[in-house]
Amino acid sequence: MEFIAFTYVGNFVEREVIDKVVFNVFDEANRFFEGKRFPLRFLYIGRLKLEPGYLINLTTPEGKIMVYPMEALVELLYSRLLREIEGQPEIRMNKIFALTTFPLVSRNRYFDFYEKFLGVHETLLGLRMMMLSMKPFEPEGLSRLITIIKTGEDVDVEARRKLRLKLHLFKDRLLKGVLHEVGHSFGLEHCRNQCVMNSPASMVEWDLRVPDYCDDCTAKLRAVLGRDTTQLL
Ligand SMILES: [Zn+2]
Ligand SMILES: [Zn+2]
Image (cartoon, rainbow, N blue to C red; front, side, top):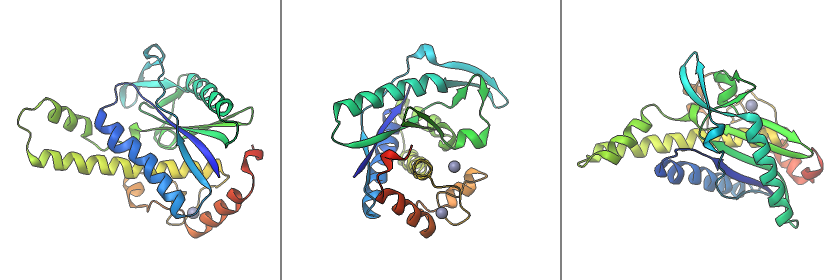
């Protein structure tokens, strides 16, 4: 069995989003690996925090946004993974996956939709860091709805139903993103089938993908997972 350390890096994350999105993505991904009989599991290692001082305010074509500097995050993930490996030398693990609440920038270059939608990978001294920003997957109006429900005294059933649907959609989109990046980390490339490895041109397209690898990608992944992939990097 191989493990991938799983964490999320968040500032100002709503409780609902952590419970209904982050933890559900983690659980469902593990159930997915189990269902596929992949000898692979995510290992939750707790939340990581980049100090607020690291957050950068950036003016972009889409307005002013807050972003994380990728280099600082890579360092944080690297040292956290190393500590985890040293603490549990008996398990096979050389990768870490981080969901981040804010988009990432590298040397002040702003990732465009395509890049920030998909994750970023960095390999350092045989360890692989994977980062996926949650922001681009967030359904429109979610944070407004959470605020309304949190502050409203008399919130109707309809608003709560809407919130549930949005959180569910958020989780579905992210789960596919996570499977996509995990695929890359084991050498899968983009494919043209109905498959999470088929990278989308838009969120609408992404919503139409099933949360699964196609037969080709499944077979490739299974072949790689059968080998000792900790030696491949
Ligand atoms: Zn990709
Ligand atoms: Zn495929």
